[in-house]
Image (cartoon, rainbow, N blue to C red; front, side, top):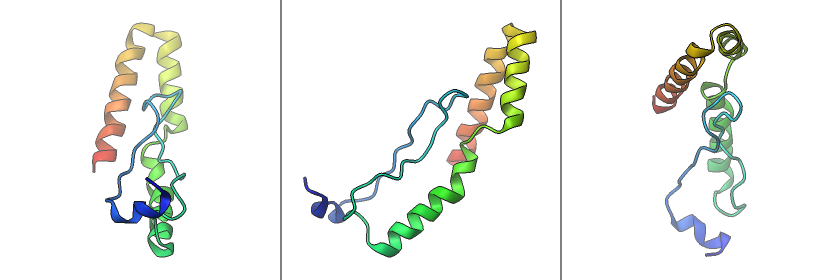
Length: 93
């Protein structure tokens, strides 16, 4: 399939990453140049810019995780899973 044939297919977007502190999800911006017309491409890039924050780990979340990792290592995995679950729910919405 060539880039010029992409216009006739439905759009599909994949998240890259593991949804973890060390490798969070992100939406890739590298897609074929002929896949989208100019206006849909601008809307898509704006959507990525606007929604990326829901997948990023905040500084507070990182500090809470590292705090538990150092002081209570047995709770660190539970905290990490709960934050990953929260990110997953936010992306679904």
